[in-house]
Length: 328
Image (tube, rainbow, N blue to C red; front, top):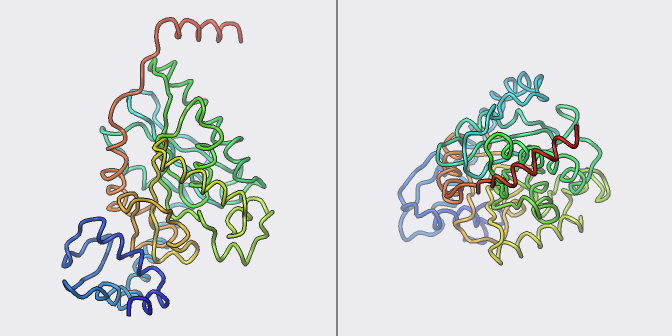
């Protein structure tokens, strides 16, 4: 019966693993996983998910459509960094938000409001593209090198000059394509400023069926989302290797109502505690759910944000001041 249901609704096996990993009791209903299950009847939660599929889809789509006009209006100011901290006052590891394909940094406005806490570091965002809703013709590698690397370099300079702190680690949170850009930086550019953790939301780590229909594997950046793109496959394998060695923490958020990136694509071979599968989110609404955002913060971000960034010695400050003077 379970295999039959999985063939009809591929998200069933992923939802079952999340229920057991989260420690939710069989008769608990939450805003993230709307289900009622009977103890001892293993397929009841899957049946309930099937029964409530249409109401959940309407609920998720309605929320996304309500937010889209606000997102469009805010995107008129997509080049502004008004949401970033004006001054560095927090000594904890900063969090950098990386938006997805065809979007801009304004997509994070709701998410960052509920992610922020005194127990975690400052939150920053930036644009991957020149235009608000049109992708640049870049590969994932080029996005990481031309956009994310300069952002982190500028933050390292700010932390040194404003707070006398050595920015040696960051936490990257990426939606869809943004998760892949985060992974690319962690694998190939994180020598000076390492990535402590990556949180990916609906990222096509294993490709997207829709991308296979629209793009050729060589297209920029759409080809990176195809299931046959070798660069994306190698990136995924390298990230998992690093996670298993303990040099990087990986966390994934998947959505069973996501028609673009299915949970089987957005999840990785990780410990169940490192995965969240939502049954009431689509590809975009995962970024506007306060409950989900707080769960990400409490379950993952705060635990890995313990401790402070190291202070910069007076000698290092002096050397930096001399370098600035010589560059004038």
